[in-house]
Length: 59
View 1 (cartoon, rainbow, N blue to C red):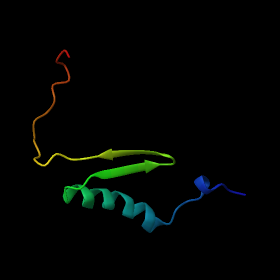
View 2 (tube, helix red, strand yellow):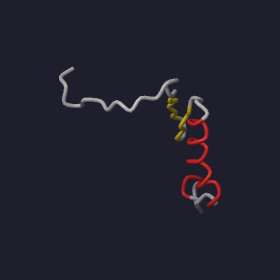
View 3 (cartoon, rainbow, N blue to C red):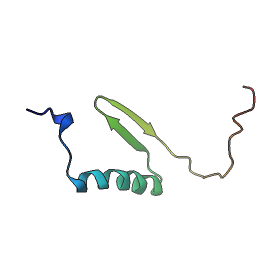
View 4 (cartoon, helix red, strand yellow):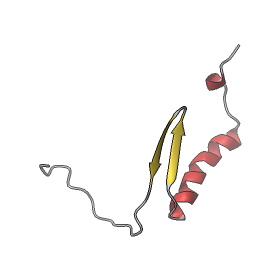
């Protein structure tokens, strides 16, 4: 007997998930990632920037 989480999803389902995230991001829509009961919504800014954060700067 296998639990639902142990089953291998169909190849098409696995491949469609990252593509959905890319399509939503390209459209400027918020992207919600889910894992079980947890979720996180990422809302990209209207204007993209190529500026890199300075991780060494003191907060």
